[in-house]
Length: 369
Image 1: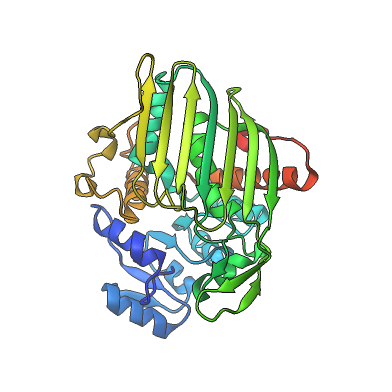
Image 2: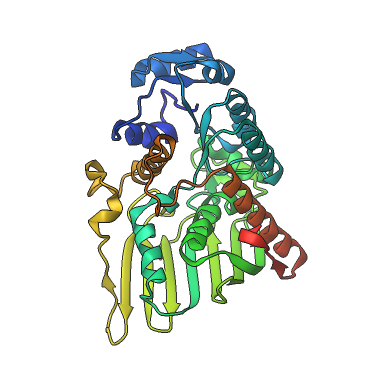
């Protein structure tokens, strides 16, 4: 759901990811009309094209339903797939808010179906290697971590394809998307937050169209600064800015008693493309780049050297999901984040909003929820 003849995230990432993996066959798609479904089916050689989500969900030819539409439509499109008992892979965020995410997770639980949510940084070889380095004591005891990133969008301008990002009620915000992807990766590597304090500001309440110059109201925040303490006791600081920075795309430091680790990326949407890892420990001098060992590629040799492609992280998540479905996932390997995990992350973001609204520290209970 969401594969369009005019392009988009499904065409850019999901189709190449599926084409580069064994075990998957792209059999069907659905769109908002029969005409647009036929156009996409012809362009991507998909044999079955449906004009509604309900038709696709009912098809006996479909085992896994992938939802790649904009966040405001997730609830209405995911619900029929779950009702039909299909495995569902939804892009992140799962819902426009916590209530929608909880509704979908509860329905999935009642139907007893396998689910996945597109927090693909968790499947990235570089992040799994980073987590192991920390767990194996590369930096000793973690004392602090600092993360600085940009949103790419939510800056001074907007275009026709991203007008919905200006509306805070859409669920597609700087907090839910760039910050959500990033803080989920932080939690994967270092553990969840125990408590947080936060500032969230909308410093550009009016933005300009990139071509027409039309001015539009923006209700989404464009500055998010969160500080807190992790369950390990380490101190964390995370700052995301709307728009782009000439200085820093993405920078993440992990500082410990015995060493330091650094993650860098040039692009704002760092979870799409290539990350660079650096480290130094003990008596080491300057930071040196740390190549990711080949074993973290999970035998996906067709993706070796292609980490800069948007489909790279998605392909690794699909590989994990395939192994979960077939029961071939190694016992010591984490599976993909599911809808229950998405609810925990949505809950965390809601607590951050509460901390920003009240100006008080907020305690996060089990798993950041």
